Image 1 (cartoon, rainbow, N blue to C red):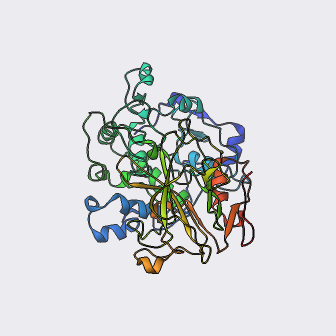
Image 2 (tube, rainbow, N blue to C red):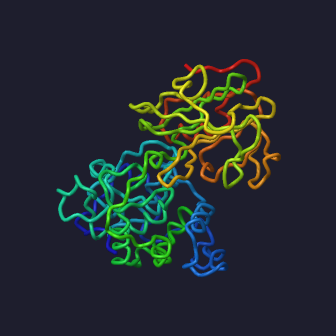
Image 3 (tube, helix red, strand yellow):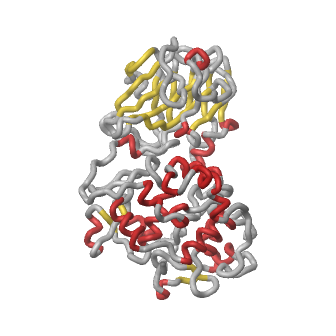
Length: 445
């Protein structure tokens, strides 16, 4: 599929061209950095289990995660280092050397740090920042004219429809990023009419350029593949084709991502105190649950003394990004929590765990943050006696949203709070950024 007409080719700025210099044309030779990227080898483990029609989202998510072998920085520290811009130039070349095909008329130059881009090269496209800002939270779909921007969908070019469909399906799969059929503005994690994306996917099968880009993204830049390019039929087997009737919006819980509300401070010396640092504005009127019960892989472990769950309802105006809150005597909203089950009581002897979660529109637990000062995450499937008060398995959702520390009674995050959100998230999961002791309690400023 042709990405855009030749009239929209734009020569990159001198600075960007310098940063992209790799000693070869982006459209010609592409060195191989990662092996096992041919289709047969890459999917060998899944093909041994059955045909693609039998694969699950969990199967593919695990494979993609395990083979994601390179996290690119936005800008390389030197011109010789790989970065996101070099990948874009290599994967989306124009007809002339030193050009790229742009989804819009200008590239978003908002990336300005050497930190990891926290995205992947399969779905990022050169795009104009002002257009993306106008799009806001509106979901992807077809529009007759731009006047429809105030409705359910935003304009989408038929020339880029298949890219959006194929890229979105695998890199933002449910339940991480739910699909929807209609409604007004969507939450931060619901972004498309599923029936529209199905139509695009069926109408515009993968082209030779897309297949080549998938190959290069794996072998040169990232080490993993987009299965919806390799096996287009997965769209039908993994995502039921919906009707065009509107579906219900997700609740506020569905808008919160893992790592959005990390643990900031824990005092296990009585009285218990747990403090959280929100990375975004938490909506008002939603329920948040905190528990020190163990997780066994399928649910919270019950019947253990001094283990329990508490709940609070956020105030009507919500809780603003950066405003510390939690449970305990020295923190905002600390006295608004009530018991749900058991008796929440953090252990000082061998450590304990703290999980923060909410309940989504499907009635399922959505873990938001995890903390343990027992030194280890235990295996799932143990008995209540084996977990006791100190141990727990790590919920799979919290693989990238939790921290485990050696046993000390009290801990607090001692790193910088004046940095970009992505850097702050990473820093708060770094044990070196935490301070703990067994003496006095820590307080919040």
